[in-house]
Structures are given as C-alpha cells and as structure tokens.
Amino acid sequence: MTRILAYAAEAFEAIWRNRARSILTMLGMIIGTSSVIAVLGIGSAASAGIAGSLGAFGEPGLFVFADPQQDDPAGANVQYRDVATVAADDGDVLRYVFPAFQRNYTMRANGISYVGQVVSQQDHTLVPDGLTIREGRRIGADEVSNASHVALISQPLERRFFGDALGLGQIVRINGNRFTIIGVYDELKAGIFSNIGASDYIEIPYTTYHEIAPGPIDGLLAYAKPGVPIPQVQDRLFATLQHLHGARSKYKLQDATAFLQSFEAVIATVSLGITAIGGVALLVAGIGIMNIMLVSVTERTREIGIRKAIGGSRNDIVMQFLLEAVILSLLGGAIGTALGVSMALIVSGLVSSLLGPAPVPYLQIILIAAGFSSLVGVVFGTYPAMRAGRLDPIEALRS
Image 1 (cartoon, helix red, strand yellow):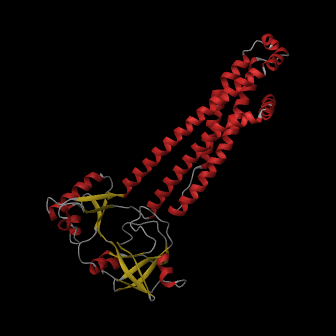
Image 2 (image 1 turned 90 degrees about the horizontal axis):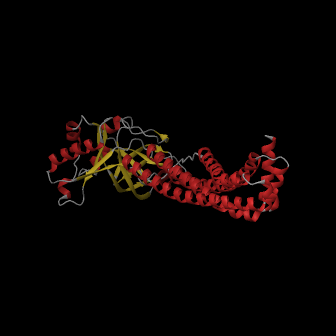
C-alpha cells in the first residue's frame, strides 16, 4: 500500500508538472462523462416524473370514443344508455365501465365568473387514486346513485373564487346549475396524462352530468379485468358499439398506460443515442490518454532506465505508469461527473416543478461514471505502461 501511495504521489506530480497538457487530455473525458451522466439523470427524472404523474391519478383506464373523421360521426356518438349495454355484454372482460364527460362550462361563485373544465367522476372507492384532499371528502357511491348536485374543486379554483377563504360548503353554479362544494383537492402538479389537463377544474358525479348535459357523452371509460389483453377488450368494445350504432361506425381507443410506455421507449432511445455520442467522446478521451502516456514514456525514458538500474522491477514501472493513466482518467471523470450531476439536478428540479417528484439515482450514476473512468484509464493506459516496463535499462540510459 505504501508503494502504491508513493506511485500515486509521483503520478500527481507528473500530471501537475504538465498541467496544461493534462487538462487538454482530460477534456474528452470531461465531455464524455458529463454528457453520459446528464443524459442518464435527465432520462431517469423524466421517466420517474411522468410515471408519478400518471400514478397520482390512479389507473387511467381505456377511453373509447367515436372517430370524428368518419362519414357519420353524429350517428356513431356514444350515448349514455350504451354504458349499461356494454357492461352487460362485455362484463366478462371488463371490471367497470363509466360514461365520461369533459367539457368547458361557465362557473360562477362568490360573484366571480370563470370558464373552466368540468369533468365527470365515479365512486372513488371503485378506482382509487393517489390525489390528496385538502378539505372535505370525495364523491361517494350515494352521490353517484342519487345524482347529487355536489362538486369537488381544485385548490387553484378555490383561490380564484374565494381568495383565502375556504371553499368547503360554498355554492358554485355550473352552467346555471347549483352545486355544493364537498371537497377541495390539494394543489396538483401539471400531469400530462391526467384526464383533467388543467389546474382550474371541477368534478361532479357522472349521473348529475347526464342531467345537465343529456345528449351524447364524450366516450366510455373502461377498466379491463386483470389478465385480459387490451386488444381483446378493444375488439369487444368496438363490436358492441357497432352493434348499437351500425357496422360502419368507427371508434378509437386511448390507452394512457401504453402511451406512457411508448413515451418512455422514446426517452430511452434518445438517451441511448446521446449516450452513444458520449461513449464516442470517452473513446476519444481514452485515445488521448494513451497518446499522452506514450509521450510521457518517451520523455522519461532515461528516468525509467535509472529506476531499473537501481533495482526497479518491470512490474513497478508498469504500475507507476498505469496508475498515472488511471488518475488522469479519474480526474477527468470526476470533473465530468460534477458537471453532469449539476445539469441533472437543474433538469430534475424543472421536471419536479412540472410533473411532481422526479427522483434521480445519483449513487448509481456516479458509480457508473467512476467505473467507466477507471476502465478507460486501465484499458488505454495498459499499452503505454507495458511499453515502459519492457524498455531495456541499458538502451534507456543511453537515450
């Protein structure tokens, strides 16, 4: 250990003696390591943030709606009564199916008017979510079965209508209809996969929604039974709706979970591409380290001859130069790691502000960076170190 520490001290001294050359050599390692770490960190933060955003709203379900591009979209519109037929005919592949509404209406409370989104909601015990209630409670089975005029509102909407006062128990009018606020959601992050898509919104029971908007519904929100493939559910739903509205009716299905998986696959592909570019930079950095170590061996040929003449073994010479290459690589990797982690921290904070918690596995990333740096130093430092160890001491002293 004492000998290795002595070699390390000599390596640092050699690097410092040629610091300008060493810094230029380390630039490739710094760029490559920082880009790899930044991409890994940003990709992890984005994936975690998106998954957390989707998970906060619970199981997203499958949204089925009439294709607006077909010849007769009005004839294919999903009706409220279709829900019971779908539940009866496709109950073997579905756990639940609900009518889905999401529209903009004029809301009025406390003398303030605002046009915002009103979405339908079912009994929260059937499909629970991870959202927190700031005040009051959620919509329950009784409110749904009785088509009660109750509403849950978001905290930003509560502030818009009531300022610092509580919205719980207050009255809000939606398109002229009177609703009592029974709960207020805690402030949400902007989840791109939510069925809400805005921060100022109101939820009401879907049965009550049908009373104030008795025409066609926006679509069906279906939940498949465990183990049932989504394509099978899609085929059954489309077949039932075509039986109700005609064989020429066309429908579309949105699967937020599949969309999330596709989005994560895109992120992974982009991350892999940029990581490959960083890998090329690491390869160039390794070649630079090999080049500088070969130059160092040439410059210190007489020193190597003296060391061998006074009893230095081949292994000692190899260890000295190999350790110098590894330290050079690790220094570049450490600086690159600091830059990459800083970039990942900045982007992770931005993702957290938009989507919610976006944890980044910094320890894992740093260990990967340290491993790559050491590997580059060993791989590209081995040949110069072996070349130094093979030098003949007499020829070296004559140089």
